[in-house]
Image (cartoon, rainbow, N blue to C red; front, side, top):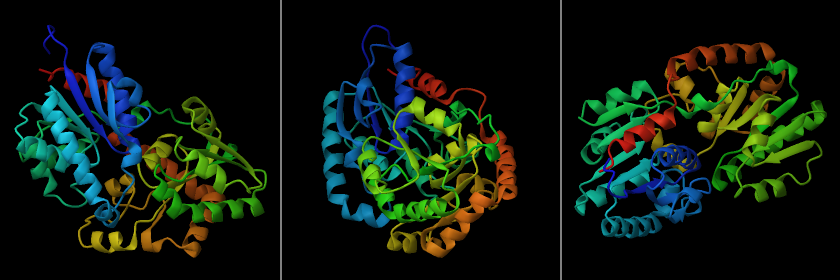
Length: 375
């Protein structure tokens, strides 16, 4: 890194998990290089660390193949705007995070317009699950890929893409000290997108009705994001059990320590719950056409990463066309009442986590790789 001038970084995060990662990486960068100029796309966490935020997470609500098709005109317009902006401002390095279906077309077009400086990406596309050809595509346009899991490296280095392991952010999460049978509360995690909340909330409602009948003293804890909080308050306004809805990170951590079980929308949240030693049931539902199309390409049987890694049904999950009122009620009752099964889940989860957790802090590792390549 040259000390005699100020460097400019452009960062792109279009999902909440990407905003979480971006915020932590930017904090590390600022510690070591406080005068770094940062522009880009992100959420509320990243915004205070940036000079200019050109779009926010609210502009990227689509998820799944079918939903993206209906938003493609908007995304093309955003990409065209960003390409002109990036070329005009001559950024020293571009950092994209996750969201390959948006970031790949963006970076590909930037390269075609002659941008020849370094471009990094954090969170590998899931080429081991489907669309393996993306590994070669990424190798053609990116300088370096920073991955969360060691097993991902082999898919990209064979195409000559420099790939480094940083580790998963669950590194920073502390395990619950209290054994789950001794805690009363239950966590409801309905997703980070409004579309997920809309599709899954009927099942959270079913869970509430069961708890009201059989566990009337239980407290429901719902950690969420600012943009979803009003909707969740509205949806739960008639619930008679005690509910804690929180967006505050310290308050969220405190409440997690009192949770005995969790009902979770599939995704990053399920790994975080696993690290906290909380037994969980995972649910998810794609648009039925998205599921139909994806069935022809997906090479894995499970949605949850830990289940995929072990090729075993370790964390219960009910997804897509298998998710209905009957299957959900059966799975949820087992989560609430079968502590023997819950104990087995936690034991197996901890064995898998030992295989995938890194010794060094991921965000520091990522920041050091970026700083070493600013020019």
